[in-house]
Every structure is written in C-alpha cells, then in structure tokens.
Length: 296
Image (tube, rainbow, N blue to C red; front, side, top):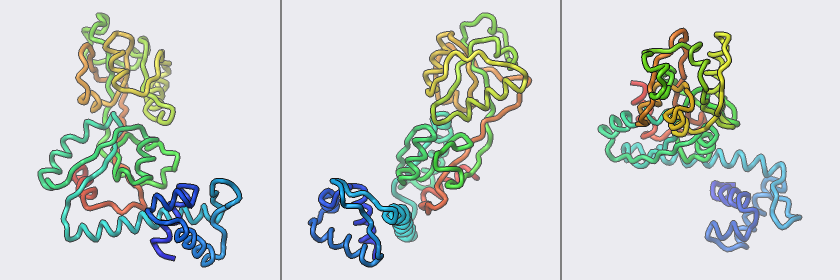
C-alpha cells in the first residue's frame, strides 16, 4: 500500500461513492475500483459496506480512515518542511483568533513582516469550536485564544504557548450619572446594576470565570443578557442597558462611543491567553517564526 492508494481510499470515504470519488480524483471509475480491491486484498479486510446506495465504512475502514488522514497530513507537512529548508520563510500563514484576542495580532504581524516580507497572512475569526475545527482540518496552523481552549477533541490534542495574562475591567455606559464620578468600581457595586455576559453555547469559560468572581464575594450578578458577540454587548452598554466585564485588551479593538472602562477593586482576576496548535502537526517555518514573536 502506498500514499497514492491512501489518497484514493480517503476520497472514496469522503464521497461515499466510487463514481463521485473518481470524478474528484480526475480518473476513470474502473481503475479506482481495482485500487480499492487491491487494498482490501492486501489488508485481508473489507473496508466498505457496499449493500446500500452509499458506501459505508466498516470498523476496519473507520480505523484506516483515521490513521490514513493523520499519515497523509504528516507526509504533506514533512514535504513542506523539507522544501522550506531551501526556499526560506515565505508563503501564506493561516492563523485563527477569537474576537477578544484580535488586538494581539496587528503589532506581531507588523514585527514579523519586517523580518519576513514574503509571508502573507490569512486570518480567521471564530469561537473555540470553530477554531478547533479549522485546526483539525489544517485550514489554520495557529490559534490565538483565551484559555482554557474549550474543544470537543479534548485538551491532550493541543500544544499551548501561554501568553501574559490580561486583567479584567468593568465597562459602563457614559450616560449613567450615578457612576460618572467613579474612577474605579468594586464587584459589589457592579452587582447592583444589570449585567451583560459574554457567552456562547460552546465556550463558557470567560462567563464562568466572571460569575465565579462575583460568587467569591458572596454576590449574585443580575444577568439580563447572554451574548456571543463582543460588539453587540458593547453596543448594548453604550445604549445604557447594563454593564459588562471584559479583558482589558479587548477594548483596544473597538472604538465605540458612550462607554467607560474602569478598573475593578476588591478583585484580582485575570483572563488567561495563549497560542494553540495541534501536537501532531509539524509547524511550518513561517508558523514557528511567527510564534517566536510572542515569546521574545
């Protein structure tokens, strides 16, 4: 069995039909069927259940699919790594970031491009679930995110480079006369106001960290809205609907009028930040050098 046959097998598994797989591979159906038969004969197992209209993987087929996908990824990444030895640092670097970490990227990209001007960037924004999927599909190499990284694949799948922690700050409407004279605010004072919480169905870590800090002081926030969008929450704050608590660095990414940012007294809690990548992924030269800009 060789790499070419593994590619054939994975395409058949993805398409569910020999005809569609052959079209995807730009080849005729009979040769592809023969290659599949040769693989099954060599392994001594049946890889697909052919009883229905769609080909279904057997247990042996599912095992081979998982291992073959990993092998092909490592093979392709090794080829890239070998080519880069002579080609230098160039090409496209695809990275992801949660919206609350976007502000960490511009300065690093600027520094990086001063040293490696031939590298271009593709940036994808999304929550932990989307970024985990993009990492798994090799659509991105690195993800800048809040920690812990909440992925259904499990934490053991990822390598993590922690970054400096980010303090939480309170965000209030400028229009509230009762807080206009304040230069800082306590968690007890915040508990008296309607509260807007950043939370999605897949990522609840930041929400729980903030609620935990309230409860640590014996307080119960009046949560009137849970929202997955930082921009929407800040717009609601600007309208005078309520307050929120966000990592300080988030505020540099939004120029929204009619809001105030205050430090929080009687509390010392931080938002952990890090860069995440797949442990079994061989990082390209450009990804490794970009990672270095955060470590230096």
